[in-house]
Image 1 (cartoon, rainbow, N blue to C red):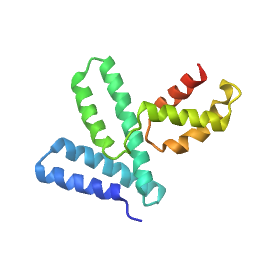
Image 2 (cartoon, rainbow, N blue to C red):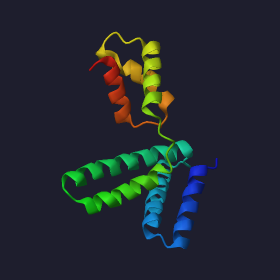
Image 3 (cartoon, helix red, strand yellow):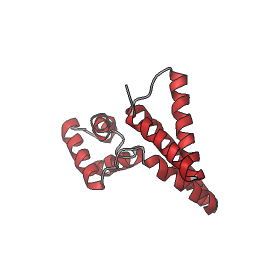
Image 4 (cartoon, rainbow, N blue to C red):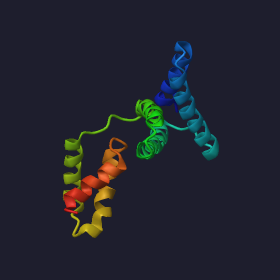
Length: 150
């Protein structure tokens, strides 16, 4: 099965080579290498969902690095990580707004009917398939906790 995201990645690499954009080419090569490694390790041909999941993991790593570099006062490294994060986000679905997330959280609460905060897992089980990478897990967790009043 063809993956439009892998095609987009190949196109990004070619365009970066032609334009001489070394940073963008490096980002594209990093993502391409991660995709190839995953395909070889798991002996699969990644589809778009697999590429998205990989890009999400790499994005989370970049975000963690940005936070740590900021704390360490290394703004030069923050800028480099932010540039790579921006590139990775091109391969992720459009992030949902806070209002959309809040609406889905409400629907999940109506469907799951949690009796207490201990049943947060029931809500997440209903909610996460509806989100499908359009909101960071940390954001989702915070929204559910806020709705539970904790």
